[in-house]
Image (cartoon, rainbow, N blue to C red; front, side):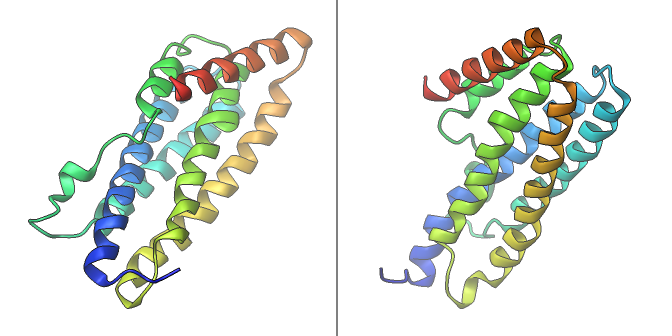
Length: 180
């Protein structure tokens, strides 16, 4: 694989940074909204904290966008494929149970967000990428740790077969919306 030159590299990386900013902003919104509707105090605290993390990540991704009139950074902040439909499906769960919301987040949305962060490794290289590498180094372990804690919280809320079935169904719906 050949390493792209600086101009070629930034035109490849910048749209990915914009998509990560968009995803982080949406996760900030949905987790903040859902934090106010969770019934378990641990879930409220968890989502409120993780919402703030995603807000911080969105700021980092936006600051990493190139400051170039040719690239128009604000126009790069847009949804990755499948995310608009997935978030519409997630919004339909605003009144759902804690396990459904946690399953949608930690079995659907957050792992896909982490995958987008990890995908930057494929295209980030060279001397001009030190800042982006640093941002990835801050965000990746933060999202991974939040996902791990989210999985543990989800497992704690899956108290009966009905909750498990509802969570599985919600994740299937979310998965289908990513494919649509």
